[in-house]
Amino acid sequence: MTTFERIKNLADNQKISLQKVAIDIGLSENAIYGWKTRKPKGEDLAKVADYFHVSVDYLLGRDETGPTTQTVDLAEIASKPKDFDWDSVLSVGGKPIPEEDKEIIRRLFAHKLPK
Image (cartoon, rainbow, N blue to C red; front, side, top):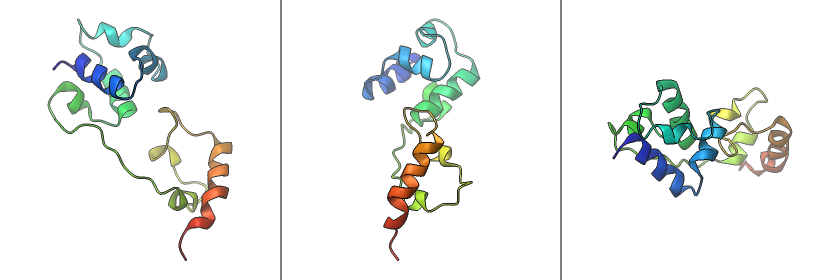
């Protein structure tokens, strides 16, 4: 399977178009389709890997470990100090959560931790 095919499969599994993926990570709309015939830049592959939560080695076919699904406890995240790096564990559509939404999550879930 080629790098392009792996990326296409990841997008198809999430019901996302390759154009949307490209735009979301800051590439031109048809950039990923160009990878059918030419090799992508390493930094662009890294963006795709981060977007789908896989390794670049997975995209290149050197590692069969696919996407990771990790459970996130919102009550635990909400109880973290305000300077906690939320972007390392949560996102919306691959983009950082706005500060006002983080505050809402804090208020909703902070009191839910067991005592």
